[in-house]
Length: 289
Picture (cartoon, helix red, strand yellow):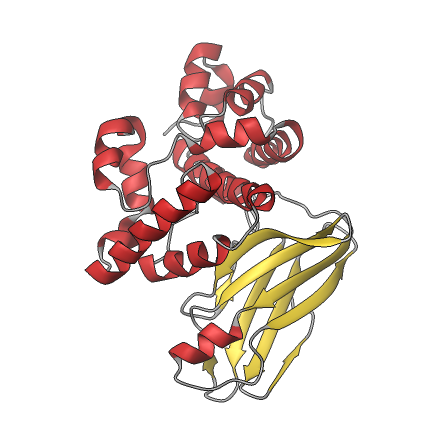
């Protein structure tokens, strides 16, 4: 790890090598190096997002994807990505503890994903189990080729910021890295969090709904990292689609609503919390805090 001051002061070649550990897109790394000095950790994270979401294109996204091993592919992890092996191993630690059926299904889904989209499945794996990632990839496999890359690039930048926090000693303390959009699902029938429910965030583009991000509720029924840090949505109408059908199937319940689609309006850069209270025959929502 290095300090922000060290990142600012080392020569360009060394700074490039350090930042390349976080993202291998040449455009992103070069622009980050030339953006130095950063006045604060907050400024660094903001600039990282600004470059990625506003100054990079699909070619840059696909180049960045090559810097990751396949989820659960230990062989390629050790051979091809030795310089980030420890970081990636930690990010994928929950995959290693999965049962063989889940690993096999996840491997098959990865192959199907790569065959369809032309690049490996990119997901911020930190804190996620193999079952949760299987749920995410199964949802994303339904996306159109033209749309999925924008979901993948959102995940890519989550990983970039996670690796920046491992590179810069005080970044996680001094920079705000929360998602602008969060959710919390509660199963009111049993009074417990609605765990492992897949949720898709969509936005309107050319009068059609397009996926932006896909996540799965955790053990507390929450998704706190739906959007990458410092990704700010433009003002407009968005929707959160909760896969209640699959959730109730795991609960061995027959729900009336196969999905819950909550539309809401983003008007500024503030935080938007969209909770869901669900039962088999009804649901409610509100803007939380």
